[in-house]
Image (cartoon, rainbow over all chains, first blue to last red; front, side):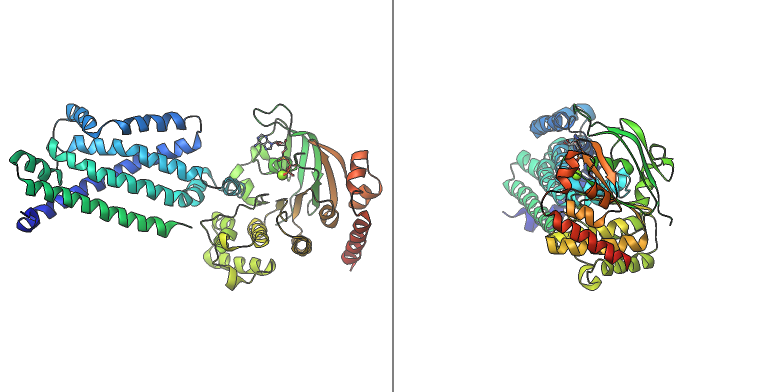
Length: 203
Length: 263
Ligand SMILES: Nc1ncnc2c1ncn2[C@@H]1O[C@H](COP(=O)(O)OP(=O)(O)OP(=O)(O)O)[C@@H](O)[C@H]1O
Ligand SMILES: [Mg+2]
């Protein structure tokens, strides 16, 4: 029954690939979301449009989104990677914007008045205080990405999804269970680690 | 550093999307080392006028000069680092310790670690807070009065040429307030920093000012030495303002102040 006990190294290798896929996609997603989130916080007129558009993408079922990217990039690593990056934008950008919006305006005013440049106000005052909210967004995004990344197995990608889809094809329930359980354990571990980080960052 | 002189020349400010001016046609000269108090009711434009000096508020027309230089032509960031500013809402940075808050401008100016640490301790002592007990506290662990004092220390940390103080003692009780006013007179007296001090508290104005500027609806009603404003109010409004409440005490304060300053 237990695929995990018979093939521990195979499961571990796929789990590691899964983590790598999500981690790299998350880093790229953060690099894109950071300027978008700051833009949304700085331009209250633009914010509803920007976050609305990202929110609309977020509501597209992930399988449908993935199909579009398979069409565009072919099978393999690329479609799932791009889907993860785009899918995460809403949660990440929204949490950055919310974190910055939540900061006491008096502190920003004081920072400008004491002679911080715009970049210094962002990095020394706004960003550190937005961080707990931002990490909350990263946490939600990371968990969703771990789940969605399993679809990568379907499009010739890497990670635990390979077990699940091979299991489906071969009618091997044990493989499906092993893949699903491993993905859940990953999600729970990431959730706990980021919750702790969030708590440590709070003022 | 030599105390700066500040000159307002026909300054008018109108905020975007607002029908009337916040400040209309104000001209005023503040000499080097002088402590000028802007006095007037809520909404009369005190904060707005103050914030034209460090360019936090743009002018509709007119000109503001610091040491003869039009502030519009100065680099805003450099200007702000050379002019201390205590904001009305205190605004200590929640993500920094007390020491880091006080050290903000010195570190922006690139002071070395040793000088910054020494300056922080010196300032904490100056404002009557034990450095060992307060250095590493977070602003959330301070009382309103302590926070305001640290706001003042933060503003003067880099020995600014001029000091803008917007109701710095608004949130403290009368006893602490009086003590802080005394401190301020001592600090500013020692440093001889040019200071513009905003308040709507008449007694505070009389206690601190070398010169009082009474404002109303964005204009200057009267500017003069406290004694002259008190003795000889220029308009019925000024008369009503400076003689409201216990003006017996106001005389008493002024008398005491003169005696104290004479010694
Ligand atoms: N950012 C702003 N946008 C629009 N109007 C403003 C802004 N700031 C101030 N005002 C308006 O300009 C006028 C002057 O405001 P200001 O803050 O200078 O008054 P103040 O004398 O400092 O009052 P207070 O004693 O309550 O602090 C007020 O009518 C106020 O509503
Ligand atoms: Mg004000």
